[in-house]
Amino acid sequence: MTTSTTTQPQEIRTSGQIIRDAIQDLHQQGQVATRELLCDLTGLKMTIVDDHISRMIENGELRRLRAGVFSPIAPMPEPRAVSMTRMADGTSLIEIGDIVAHLWPRERRELATLLVGDAVQYSNIQSGVEAGTLATELAAELLATKREMATKILELERQLRDAVKGVAKRSAQMDLLGGQ
Image (tube, rainbow, N blue to C red):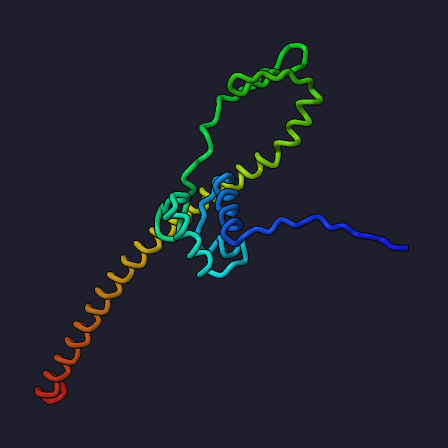
């Protein structure tokens, strides 16, 4: 009795394709691709990521937004207008560009269930943007406060030195007068 096993050929992806896919996934999620994030997501070393990114920039596949931050050159097409109208009979009309879909309430609920992940993801992206903005504002306020405090400390130290000099000067004069 012989058994034969057939294995499906596994798709072998190059490190360049892994990096390209990670950048595209991040872009589609509305997130920026950084060198560090790509290393974390792909598990590849920084030198490998840097090498592939440099080649992708040279080939016109990526553009450098700023040092260490990249975006694909060919963005997704502009989104089409989307609207939903609830009809009196309980159905809904969903219009996406020129496409119109008539949905029954159950179909609408199923569609909502499928799209809830996108809504949560958008919410998380927006929360991240707002948290980043808040962190930047707080960092700027902290820096301003540190500078203000440093200026006040320097002024108080100067006043203390002047006061100590004044006491030392009066003490020396008192010694000359005989310690009175």
